[in-house]
Length: 276
Ligand SMILES: C[S@@+](CC[C@H](N)C(=O)[O-])C[C@H]1O[C@@H](n2cnc3c(N)ncnc32)[C@H](O)[C@@H]1O
Image 1 (cartoon, rainbow, N blue to C red):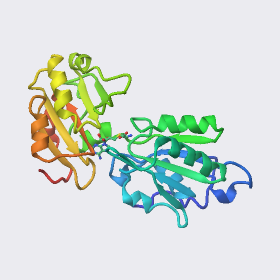
Image 2 (tube, rainbow, N blue to C red):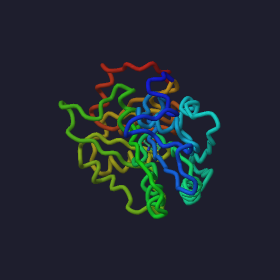
Image 3 (spheres, rainbow, N blue to C red):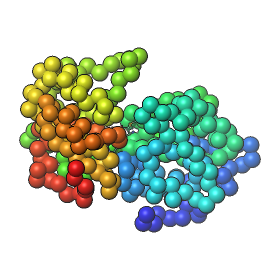
C-alpha cells in the first residue's frame, strides 16, 4: 500500500501514537478499535493506518484485507479472532478478555474490524468491556460496507430523484434475537434498504417485505465481496432477487440493497469487476 503517512516509530506532535517503547513499566497500554473499511485495503482511514502501523498486538477479523496485515510493524503479534458464518473462532467474551489482558500487559493494541466498528461489528461491546476494566481506548470509525459496497457497484444509497432516506438492517436474526426486525414497517417506509448479513435469509425477508406491501417490482441488488477484485453484482427485483442470487451462486460476504436507486447502476458502473 502507498506509504502516505509518516513513520509511526517517529511520532511527532500532539496526535503522536504511543507505542510500547514509550509506555512506562506497569502502565496499562491502550486499545484502538479501528474500522478497516469494507475490503479495498486503501479504504482504511489515515488515522486507522497510523495506529495499525504502531501496534504491538493486532486482533483482526475474518474480512480484513491481507494487505492491511502487511502494514503491521515487524515483531507485532497478530491474533486472528474472526467469526465465520456458524463458526466462531473465538467467543466474543474471550475477545473482550484478550483485549483487556493485552492492554494490561502494557501493549498498544489495534483491534482491526471490518467496515465501521460500531455498525454490526460488536465494537460497542468491546468498548464497554474496556471501559469496565478502565483500559484507555480510542474509536477510529471506518468506512462501512453499507455505503461503500453499493458505491463500488455504482449504486448511491440516496439520490435526490428517488429517495430521502436509507435504512441499514441485519438480515441475520437468531431466534433469540431481541428486538427482531420489523420487515413490514420497513416495507412501508419506502426509502433505500441495505441488508447486511442476509444472503441466506434473502428468500425469507424479501417475502416478508412483499407481505408488508413493498412493490414486488422494486429494484434490488446483491453484491458479494464488494470493493475487492472479487466483487460480483446481481440485480433483479424484490420478487426475483433471492432466486437470481442463488442461481448465480452468491454467498457471504454479501449485502442486499433494495430501492429505486439500484436503477442508477445502469449509468454508474465504474469499478472493475467479474460479472457472474
Ligand atoms: C458482521 S457485519 C459487519 C459490518 C461492518 N462492521 C461494516 O461496517 O461494514 C458483516 C456483513 O457486512 C457485509 N459486508 C462486509 N463487507 C462486505 C463486502 N466487502 N461486500 C459485501 N458485503 C460486505 C456483509 O453483509 C457481511 O455479512
